Length: 216
Ligand code: ADP
Ligand code: MG
Image (cartoon, rainbow, N blue to C red):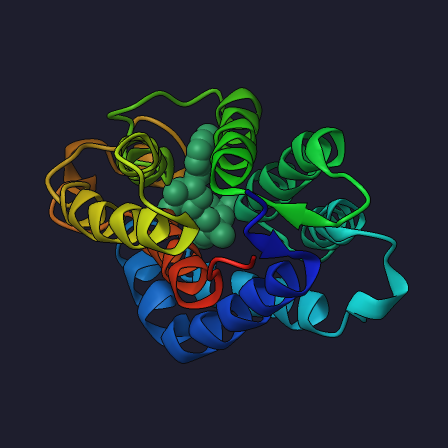
C-alpha cells in the first residue's frame, strides 16, 4: 500500500533543515573536538539551499531528491557534502524505479531507497562499520527499520524504530577510534567524542520519523 507522497519528502527535507539549524553549534562543537569545526556550518549552508528548492517545480520525489543531492555536493565544502549528496542521489534512483503515476512511496520502498543511499555513502567514503563515521548510525538504524517493517510496522512506526536505534548508535560512536575522515588523523585521541556525522544522521532520521505518516 502506498504510504508517502512527494510532499512528505519535501517536508522531511525542510524539517531536516530546521533541525540542522537548531543543532548547528552542537555539530560544530563535536567537529571542533575531533575535526576542523565546520560540520554544523557545512550542513546548515547545504540544507538552507535545499530548503529554497520549490517542490512544485519537480515532476516527482525522485527529481527533488536528485536535485537535493546535487545541491549538497555543490554547496557543502568538506566530506559531508559529497557523502550526503551521494546518499540523496542514490535514494532518488531507487525511488524513480519504484515510483508510479500515483507518486506514492510505501514503507518497503523507502527502506530500500535508504539502504541504497547508505550503500552510496559507503562506496564514496570507502568506510566500514566501526570506522567511527555516519555509517555507524545508518547500519543499525536501517536494520531496525527493516525489522519493524517485517513485523508489520507502517512507515512512521518503522522510522521511529530507526530513529531510536540511531540515537543509541550515535552514542556508541563515542568510544570508537576513527579510521576514516579528519578524525582519523587524531588516532586514539579521537575516542571520547561522538562522531559529528553520526549526530547529523540521527537528525535526518528524526526528521523522517516526524514527517512520514501513512497515506491511504
Ligand atoms: P570534513 O571532515 O571534510 O570537515 P564535515 O566536518 O562536514 O567534513 O563532516 C565530517 C563527518 O563526515 C564525519 O563526522 C563522518 O561522519 C563523515 N565522514 C568523513 N569521512 C567519511 C568517510 N570516508 N566515510 C563516511 N563518512 C565519513
Ligand atoms: Mg569538518
